[in-house]
Image 1 (cartoon, rainbow, N blue to C red):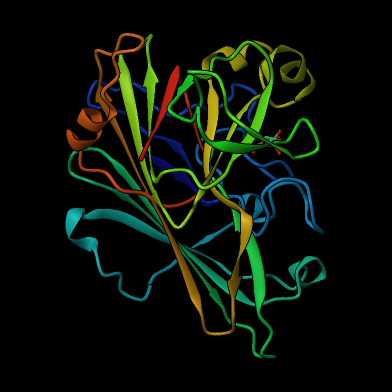
Image 2 (tube, rainbow, N blue to C red; image 1 turned 135 degrees about the vertical axis):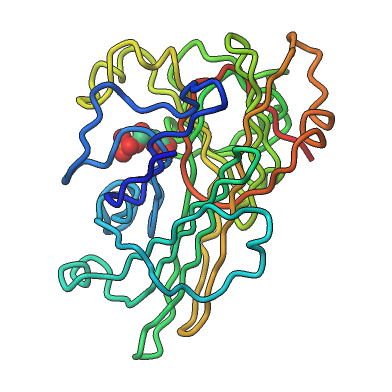
Length: 297
Ligand SMILES: O=P(O)(O)OC[C@H]1O[C@@H](O)[C@H](O)[C@@H](O)[C@@H]1O
């Protein structure tokens, strides 16, 4: 596993066979002002382009520091390998967002090779002011299981629709925010016969994005054909921004696991997939090479 201090982005995660499990564009730029195109970018304090911030907020374009002395977390028995990072506002940031906060991120690797990301965001304002924020995650695919979910179509002015198709397949650009989704999502990569399981906590929504061919060509740090190898599925908190009063802390958690799958279309038993693994999650934006996503209630 590799974690950049720039953006606190997990840019590499390999399985026992040395296969890379995360997507990073061949054109990714690993320095400001661009966020790293791929890995697990963190979208905070804003997801998307609305509001006063740069697209997806500033956390993904700041240099984080190692947190030498983080407050204890209740649950560190399931792993021993981890790093704690922290982001605090710089002087310049107050221009964009006049709030004090501490954003702690723990990136952990379990003995079985799963990733756990835990975000803790605390309002440290001394002037008594509350703030709100939105937050997200990314991943790639054909999606099944989100078919009855409501979503806001970001390509149609965030109009609300209910998913009708019996499976989501990708034949054109997609940019949808599914709202109030289940906390467990399985992503099946047919080609690699691999299932990714995401268990999210604290993020009720999920964005599904693939730029497809035309937009891919228009994105400078994205290869023209890379849209065929990625899908972005982002556990997120978007519809209802998270409110934090001074002294309050929000925690988001994501557990990401990759298991071999022998999935054939229509035969997915998500419960079996899920219970066969020990996952649970929080957080942001994951990009992976996959071909099916299943969301499980
Ligand atoms: O190019 P960016 O800023 O990393 O954003 C990539 C995509 O991220 C998704 O979360 C958004 O829903 C899309 O609208 C956006 O295009």
